[in-house]
Amino acid sequence: MAESETDRRSSSRHARTRDPLSIDEKISRTLKDLEATTSEAVAELFAEVTAAMESERQALIEGGAADERERSQKAKELRDRWLARKGGLVSMIDENWLKPASKELKPGVGRAFNELRRRAAALETDRLIQDVPVRGGAAALPQQATLKFGAGVPSLKITEAATDLTLPGFRRPLGSIHPVTQVMREIEEIFLGLGFAIESGPEIESVYYNFDALNIPETHPARDDWDTLYVNSETVLRTHTSPVQIRAMEKHGAPLYIICPGKAYRHDNPDSTHATMFHQVEGLAVDTDISFADLKGTLDYFARKFFGDKIKTNFTPSFFPFTEPSGELSISCVFCGGEGCRVCKESGWVEVMGCGMVHPEVLRHGGIDPDRYSGWAFGLGVERFAMMKYDINDIQLFQQGDVRFLEQF
Ligand code: DAH
Image 1 (cartoon, rainbow, N blue to C red):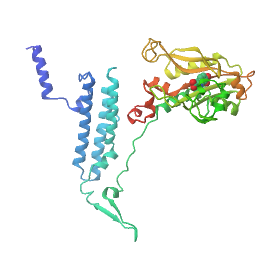
Image 2: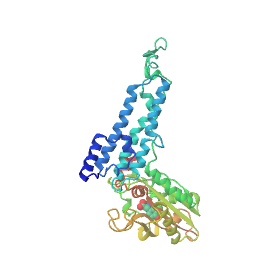
Image 3: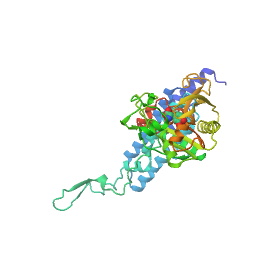
Image 4: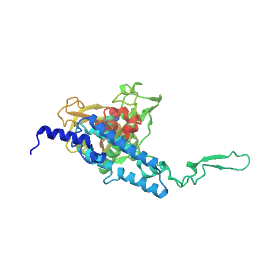
């Protein structure tokens, strides 16, 4: 006889209350199958998983082991159940919950997953082993050993835990590479591939290299105390990486293809887009017959390599004292694809770097004959690139050293 709709619904509800899914069963289903469509439901699921993991760990610790062999075996079993690369519960959560999660839920699921992974590190075999007591084995060790170092030297009391030298050592959690460093390396890779070399210069720089040699006149507002951190009247914390252009020209002459990744400092009030210390990558190409077309071609190639082939580039005129003509490179907004959004201020474009043909006066200051050689240069902000690449909206996060932020990269 056909079941009525009411019967079916009430029986399935009944089935659910009578026989709730085990944690393993939940993990083997997707969030959609589990009808977890809100962030609250997701949070609840992760709380359940975390509680299950913790109680299994506690049970192992409380149960202890008869001997070392059993302890290793039990610890390994629990570790593999949760952390095995293939079929471990954590990687199943990755496969079944995180990867197929809807666009709306994904950031929250990602965060919860990272937190779970962090906690799951307590299940690594060598950490577990330290927590699980061995019955009999441990009792065989003296409760407290006293070492005597002869007359006059105070005796040293070592507790049982410290004397068992057979225990594995503490494993320090592995860190990750800072997102600014990652982005800087990515930029370096692209330019190294184009035949550029990496140069560096001092962060405590002379006024001459930071300003004069770059054709920044005494009256330029950037020389004002407000923007520049002066060490003394002739020395500053470099306000940009551009002084390395002069140093590299002096050192190597032409032809020259270099980039300089490094720190720069400004007397700015910190906010979500300004920091007193930030990173730049400077670029400089000097050779015979270098034209604006070389600049455009290279920077267009670079921008596509970094942000992806879909983006478009746009050059607009600008002004920098060390380039003539000067330009700004904008890319079509990576967030809205050029449609217009909050990030690009509805314009569809985001300005990403300054550039231009090296001013003849600057070449001269670098000891290069502007009648024989020409060049192009650019300068970009690394934090800005990282913020666009990873959708980060506050530059301060890069310097706060918050592990919860950093471990996402
Ligand atoms: N130094 C400039 C700044 O910090 C950036 C810059 C613009 C560097 C144009 C260049 C360039 O080499 O050609 O704002």
